[in-house]
Image (tube, rainbow, N blue to C red; front, side, top):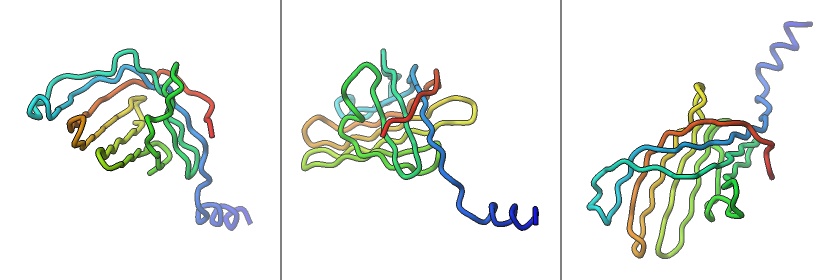
Length: 135
């Protein structure tokens, strides 16, 4: 009987558990159209974010600000990874946030814009805490 229950549990989809991480200290490299796409060191100063992934929902909260994800719609790709997308007539933005097993966050962002200039970024940051997920 025990084997049967274990077998059924292993075959059923894993229940998604809510995760929420506080991230900071994002630094890495960026390239901007203004600088002819030459990569240089870059960072987000004073940036603290909450990354929340709960089943089929994901969101980004800028701690200390009323902005939520800068208008991006976030989609979870895994229980530790999400992507955000935004598009209008003048700008397309795609970003990813992924939490590693060694308490780091990997962040990438691409902006393709006819008005503000295009750019790309690749940052690594620290998990500085956990949080309660928000809807």
